Amino acid sequence: MTRSVGLSALCVWSTLSAAAPSSSVKSVVPMSFTPAQVTAIQQITHDYLIQHPEVLLEASQALQKQMEAKQQQAAMGAIQKNVAGLFQDPLSPVAGNPKGSVVMVEFFDYQCGHCKQMTRTIDHLVTQNKQLKIIFKELPIFGNNSEYAAQASLAAAKQGKYFAFHQALLSVPGGLNPQTILQTAKTVGLDVTRLQQDMKDPTIAKELQANQTLARDLQLAGTPTFVLANGALTQFRFVPGAAPEADLQKLISSL
Image (cartoon, rainbow, N blue to C red; front, side, top):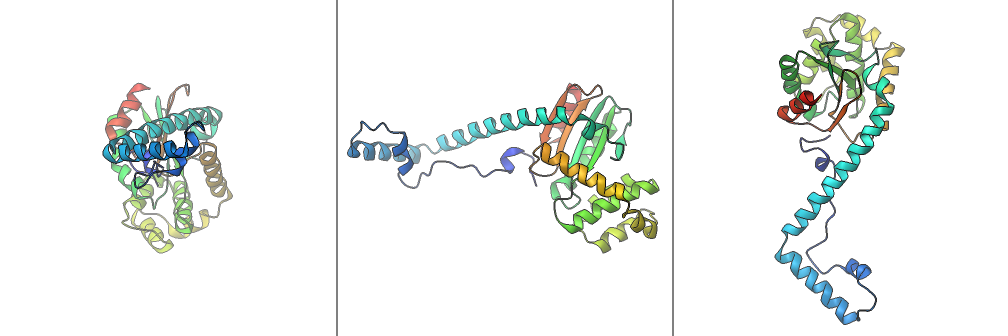
């Protein structure tokens, strides 16, 4: 699960240890140095990092930017290869303006805390942007209960209550289980008996499998993840992780 800072929330950065002189320095020191000189260089490096620990932070930030740039580049290529699956799958539920000139795809899990936190942001973006179309991609990554919730949510669409059920599930505090999922279905007026039957529809399993394939192709590291596009599907934006509303609004406006 990603945090609002994106890629940095997914990775534990490896930095040079400042606790002791690093033996790895030896590999980058020319062999013309004597063993005593190598030891002295190692000690100087160690002492410098102890005295200037901010260098480690600067190096970490530079590495993060490089990795984010590479991720964006890889994502753009994958998005262009998967335009139909991302933006034109008739089985994917939609909110907002179904004919909107800006499209935002969200990959999410109903048990993802950051996905829950983004619910209000997405609702507000839809309210503020009449041209915005939201496409939901169920990506259950937290086990069987998430899978059950995704199946139930897609089945709710057959009763015309996908979005109401979707919002209700994301409002449930803590984890989910079949009992809480079905109870939530009742609260939004779903026929639970029909819902359970519809959950067995092969098209639902097909949709979830398609979402998993998309996630692998895009090399998604967690949820939520957002993919934005203009109406012509020629410009794209990739957002790995929860993001402030202002940042998403800027991306929407740029399209």
